[in-house]
Image (tube, rainbow over all chains, first blue to last red; front, top):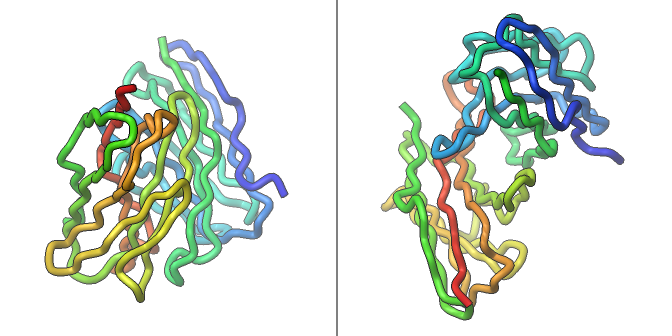
Length: 114
Length: 116
């Protein structure tokens, strides 16, 4: 049981480059989400999904795209990276948040945009 | 709008002393409440959570938290701090209305330093 797996763990991008942060879970969780963590800001929600084919924006969605074609995977795409997107990114999943079930977090991806 | 406030950015306590980290939230109903801990360069580890029932919740590593509805607070406590407790602590609140579907709102965190 791997839980929530994020890849890569570290990445350096040049401004304007694109990339995809991968998130996969093997717990059959319907709910998945992406957060970014910046010093002094806590974690802020970027996008979330309540099931395959259903996504929605969180607090800071600009510059990021998501899709959810399967229950297991929820990739986060940066179409044109900017230095302001330098951050640590966390993926989280839950079986059923509305029933009080907890969340499982991945170990994070540290992204630097130069 | 929903919000979570951790008033203390940085707290330093002596090893063996008691600890209380504060968390207040703004929400129209009783939310789900969580405390997470993050060691440097690591991910988030769940310490404890409150969904309903007894307002005093026990967690891992000797931590507990008390939900006080009248104060909209969920403060984290530990009677005797160990050097290994030095980390950053995040309070998080799950909201379940208006289509938010259970998204977590995090406080900005409190960094705990422990003096020997």
